[in-house]
Image (cartoon, rainbow, N blue to C red; front, side, top):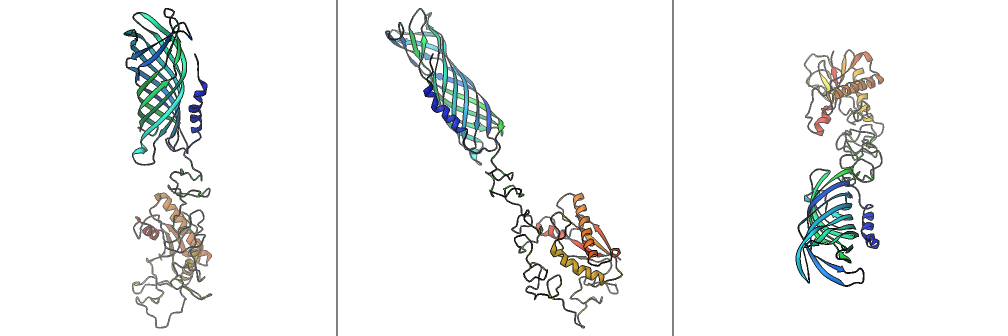
Length: 473
């Protein structure tokens, strides 16, 4: 028995190097497999040396019946398609006949090949399309085979009953079909060959027989991934690199399914850096995500209907200079509040109204009152609006006013109810801080009830997230 160790170096080195290649992907990793099928051993041309090494020789050949093969495998699949593998296989073929210069005869016995291979396969993979679940592959392998010639002979005469271990090699190709994320079935073809082994002839014959293995196999196999590899995620945002459209995201930044920083209000500043969440669509913002106020009148540009107001000018919620009404200014509904400042037009005749023209049972949406995302914290631009509201209430003695909070339909009913109550109370607290008597104000949350617009789009939901001033008495 002999083993040519030098001839094993290349396949083992290839298998070892392959384990350091590629970035892992979902479905890749360590696997176990089973294989089995038919084996066709080709006609072998062997040599009988009589009397041992250096004696006279005789050439003869054998033919084989259809044999079979079975085996087990283990290996590791990489995302780049490389798949190093270790394989233990058993092949068995029975002799059909033996022939040489003196004629031919039916042969008895069998030849077994018990092999250990280090294989390197390459699977054709892709992230989409046919090759996402169907993987053609090719590969090679090398190792050792223990060849057994068991009771080989003819005409009642035993020629060999011995074994030897030799270098073996194989090449193959096949197609794998992913049945599930972990289970793959394959069909493939193998060509397997070995060096010739040296077998002691039977005492009746004497000498030595030199014979090898050379054949082809058709296999069906299955392999099961027992330990999936963790996908590579270099920036640690929870989105694998192969799907990450925004690599190198700073640590701790909330991201969407594509790995890009979340920007809820779509103002160009991601939520982690946005000091003014829920900025209205289209508003120009600074690096902190807060609306820009170019003329410094405390009314952001997106709401400022009078840009470039001179510094120090007293302005209203629209950013326009507050000018005392002219004596003859129009009052269409006759409530004593000029049309220009009447925020509740068409008040029924004879009703007592507030300084901004609203009567009992009328409501006024406090436009441009905003809060931090999913919180009751007022934004700075909201306080300018509420300063004007506080002055209106102070200038309207004798009324009881309810601050009503509403949300959109996103989230649970309970959460929305709680948030609307908190926001209504936040506005009430701020108005009191600006001089409004506490006994004049009540706060109540209505959750997502009474929408004023559709909750099916961003614009409608923004309109439904509102605070109203209701004149209740």
